[in-house]
Length: 117
Image 1 (cartoon, one colour):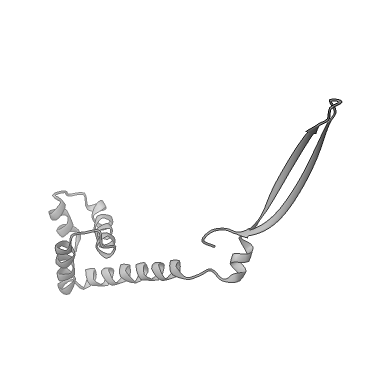
Image 2 (cartoon, rainbow, N blue to C red; image 1 turned 120 degrees about the horizontal axis):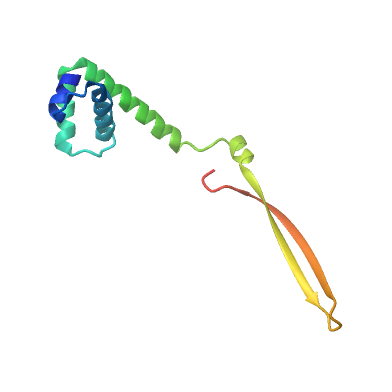
């Protein structure tokens, strides 16, 4: 879709916002956020517009790459780097009959992996 097409569809003459709006609509279409009829109309347009067809394919490939990258499991070396050490501290206070107080502090450490790591 060229800028004139987009301006006509939106009913505006703001040329500087047209490329951003068209790109946003492409992303919505590829994410399944637009009605099927709208997506089909956009796909038909790309059959006659090489510039839009190229942009459609470019955005589709970027989205696919991001999806694949987000689904991969982190390498074990990275998971180890984000492992955290948790420390529990326990304080026990005892008051004796004669009024003296004793405090016992114990600490334990454990390592755990962050969720989703």
